[in-house]
Image (cartoon, rainbow, N blue to C red):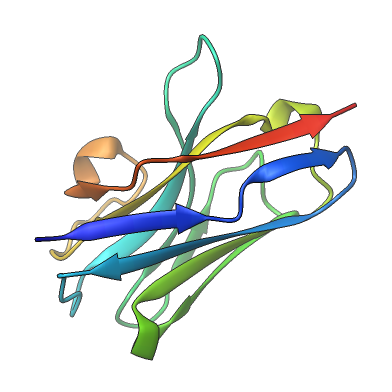
Length: 125
């Protein structure tokens, strides 16, 4: 059984930082990838960042480039999202997602097979 468990969300002031963590169990990645999405109240879930497990190619949404960093730990099956210079518009529930298969794209929800339960990030102005 595949499980993704996120942690690290919370309340932070604008300009502050948070680090989200996601541990994956029951999955072998090989040529797959892991990513982060977020969903703000009243909005659709949107892509934030992704990393390919083999080769480490990284992708970011334009809205977070230069502020967020995604990285992984092979031996722990973990992926992190370091979020710096947070803005109120970053407020959302953040979801970890994973796929054990290769997909050409990594920015769509259908590019992933497994999802975590989400962790709330709130940025106050």
